[in-house]
Amino acid sequence: MSCDLTRSALHGYFDGELSAASNADFKRHLQHCSDCVLELATQEFVRDSLQRAPVYAFAPDSLKQRVRAHLRSGVRTDASPQRLIWKWLAAAAALLVVALLVWRVPNVHDDDDYQAGLAAGIVDAHVRSLQPGHLTNVDSADQHTVKAWFDGKVDFVFPVRDFTNDGFSLLGGRLDIVQGRTVAVLAYARSGHVVNVFIWSTREPEESARAGARLGYQWVAWQKGNMEFCAVSDAAPAELEQLHRLFAG
Image 1 (cartoon, rainbow, N blue to C red):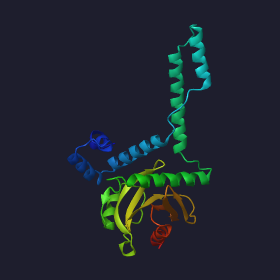
Image 2 (cartoon, rainbow, N blue to C red; image 1 turned 180 degrees about the vertical axis):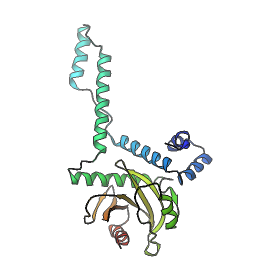
Image 3 (spheres, rainbow, N blue to C red; image 1 turned 120 degrees about the vertical axis):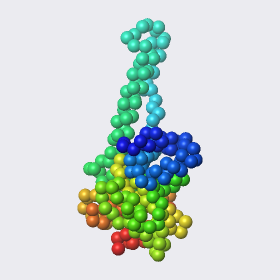
């Protein structure tokens, strides 16, 4: 990372250890520093992944039997029980790392699993954004201001539109991480509900719109040209479909 604040202040901000003044200063810094925005999103993704991962493992019966046999016999072996335990823990840790990597990388050969994993990642990112101070990196209802903020931060061009006249007020935008992919997000307000629209580039052929629900949140995903969109909210499915039509129009 080229930004000095990535090293000096970001971790304190992420852990909630900054003073109120420093916290406010760093939030303003995030509005124009893509390095810190991406690093913060990456740390949030890793933290949430570890929280969901099964990090506790039980000792296998074979190890228990060897340790018990050693203790009963009192005979010296080529490795102490403590060393055996540490060797097994090291092996378990290595397996856990492999499992996390496999879990994070979607299987391109199984479209159903990929779509389910993608939907889960997007809903999780939506839930993260509802925490105080996480919804936007740029707070503005002006579509030109929001679009200018994204310039140079993502390698694709997408429409930024305010649909206030149709009941969807633009709140701002941010960068996020979904399944290891950097995505742009536009945040809208709809009758007391927050709607996040996740946007990323794709090379996949255009498909019909898809919709579903997870953890009480509705989502609808669609493609337009070489862009993929996914709107997520606890609003009614019909309202998300209305937003879909506004973007597609």
